[in-house]
Image (cartoon, rainbow, N blue to C red; front, side, top):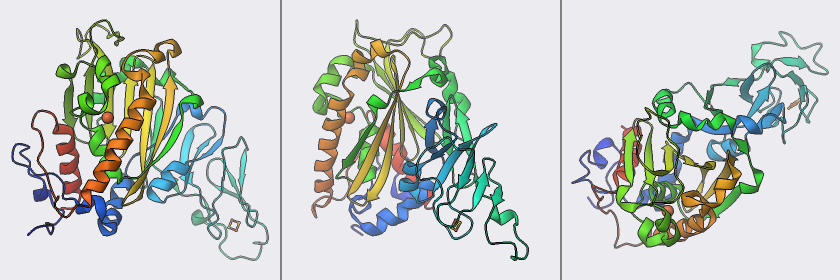
Length: 359
Ligand code: FES
Ligand SMILES: [Fe+2]
């Protein structure tokens, strides 16, 4: 029946040649927006290691905005991820990044060591059975991959880190440095799904991004899907900046301008010859999202050339188009479309992953 299909795997046909796209209610209804929030409890990008060097305690406010969990990266001998909520009566602990050696709650003065254990609590001498393990900070899973930290709310399956490293490891992103001048925080009047859908295809590049289209060889654009994400490969036009691929690399011999890696559900890692631009999408409401940009640079001189040099222009063009799509999704005349079998494999893969979450 029109508009009433359940969100199950069968909603998005496995065969892209016959499949219909996600029904419009997933983009417009509060109820569907709330239901989809459960997809954000897995791995989330926390920080690049170059952002951690200056601080011992770093609250992860963007992850809190994404999934409601207040977490902090805490560095002592090693970097770990702990709950940023006081075990007394629930005050948020670190409100900004700092270099302290003790974490003190601003409500009633409870203190914690950098290994998450309770250190001291005033006025609790007469409390019986105190402290216990539950007075220490809860620890969350933390994964370090090529210099980037990912945190999760619970133990979740690993992503194919090794496969991705084989492709991208030659860039040594662990050696990149955070460049705060590249940070952006955009509010977009569109459902977060639209931001991801749009990211997952290069189909729109000739129509929406004339400047980028000059730097990319559209005919050579490649989309590869895998469990947990999508890798898109942008080929450079002749004479434009490209990666220096090492011998034996899986893409050896090709002129590659950019690797666009998306990890489910909301993380984008754009590798260019100058470094890495990370976009994290924060769901705000059924009709609004925020997109955080973080820039990590290896070669600042290269940043003004090629596919990675027009990022702000491209971003505004993408925001413009998805805000228009958001309005279109409200139409009673539109419910579902079809996928291009040659250009929209990434979008199809994303919608399949969503539908599989609710089996
Ligand atoms: S809530 Fe932290 S000490 Fe009371
Ligand atoms: Fe785009």
